[in-house]
Structures are given as C-alpha cells and as structure tokens.
Amino acid sequence: MIEKYEFIPIRRILVPLDNSPESLAVVELAACMASVMRSELSALFIEEQELFTLAKLPFSREVSIVHSTVRNLDSGRLEREMREQAATMQKTVARIALRHQIGWSFKTVRGKRETEIATQAKARDLIAVSRGHRPDKSRSEPDAGIEFQSGRGGSGVLLINDSLSFRKGPVTVLFDGSAASIQALQLAANIAHADAMQLQILVQEDDAATLEKRRQLVHDVLDKRPLPGPRLVTGVEVPAAIQSLFHRERGLVVLAAGVSMLYEQQFEILLKRARCPVILLKSAG
Image (spheres, rainbow, N blue to C red):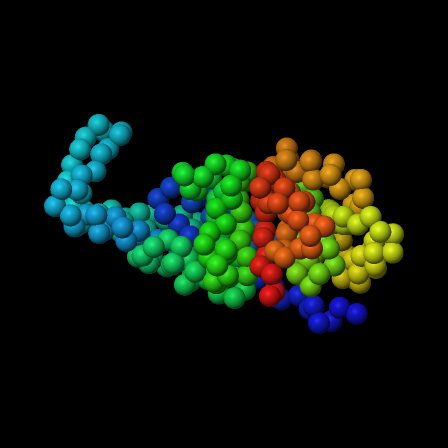
C-alpha cells in the first residue's frame, strides 16, 4: 500500500531573471513545463544589489564592449535601465505565458540572487535555472543554487540546458523504492501522461527478490494511470539507457535527492551529464 506517499503536485515554477540571454530560454521551457504540469509560472526579476552599491562609489566606471566607450557608473541611469529591462522582461513573460495558456506572475526585487530566490520560493515550488547561467562554472556543473543545497525554499530545481523542448522524448526516472523516489516516479508519470510521452523507469537491482519488490511497487504507484507503454529498465540495460541521455536533448529526467548508496553513481551521472532538462526533487527529510 502506498497511500502515505500520496503525490503533492508542484504549484509553481519560479524563474529567476536577469538581463542574460539564458533567462529567456529558461522562461520558454519553464512555461512549456508549467503547461504540462498545470502549474503557475512565477517570474522573479533580480536587481543585483552589488551593482547599485558599486554605482555609489566615486571612481566606478563601466565599459561598453559594443561601443568601445568608458563612462561613469551612474546610479540614476542604472535605476532607469533596470526599470526598462524589467518592463521588457515582463512583457516577454506575459507573451510566453499567453502562448502556453498558463497562469503567471512577475515580481522585481533587489538584493543578492541566492538570498532572493530562497526567500521567494515556497514549499512546493520548482526553481528553474540554466546550467550555463554562471560564467564561472563549466557546462558540466549544474547551477543548482544555494537555495537547493542549503534546503531553503522550494521542493526542487528544474535544470535547463540549451534545448528549448523536452517533448518527443522519454521521461526517465531513477527508482530505488524510497519515499523520495516514489514522489519522483509519480511526478514523472503525471508529466508522461499529460504529454503522451513514454515513461522510462531505471531500477538498479541485482538481487532477484529485491527487484521483484521494486517491480510490484512500481506497479502499485502506476496503477490505473493510462500511460503510453511505461518501460522498466533493469540490470545490465541501465548503463545503456543512461548513456543515451548524454546525446539526446529531448526528453526529461526526474531525480530525487537522497537515493540509496547503490544508486548514487547513476544519480550523479544523470545530474551532471544528461543533455535534456532535469528535475531534481528535494529529499523529504
């Protein structure tokens, strides 16, 4: 029986924004995901406090690479430019949300990025971020954010690569039988059902009796869910299924933090190397 693991849906996908090109790509895919998950898109435009602090210093300068000019970093002009950027972003979010027919909101805050994200995130939110957002990180290092690592705010992170579509690919979930992985399986099944995608369940078990228990638990979780051919991948087939996700941008991976030691290697590989979007759910503990 799995009643105590009743699925709690994601209410909102929180999208932190700035003036980087990656922000718009994150909004587009997060909106697509929100339409499938029946969630709200919540855009958060963050004005970095450090820029305004720097603008108040008497000898601060800004360099324009495009126009090859150097000028004083003026706090008044910075305020106006930030307001204009926020207004432009809000119009873009509104247009994208209308196209995907989802509810949306837009808020502007000033402060430190990680702190503001953690403050705005709620208990059942996904926080959408780009893997390539941070210039000081390699593309193999996901920007999961301090808000996830410290356990503050949000139920998980939606990690987005360059691909603007996760559709027409399998929804892959790593399943170890834990309460956290049951939540991940339920979320993956809901997404697969809503968008008619194949559900691929990876079960890394060598013991026959344990594997049978996992099969039965998967059956119980998916009972009465009309899915297009869920596929249970076990044993020696698991590495090949994981390998395929390194080269395919379409599809989606759903992971839950706190998997058993047997699954740790697969968890790390999928988190760092999957080219398709990844949903990383927090451990219930």
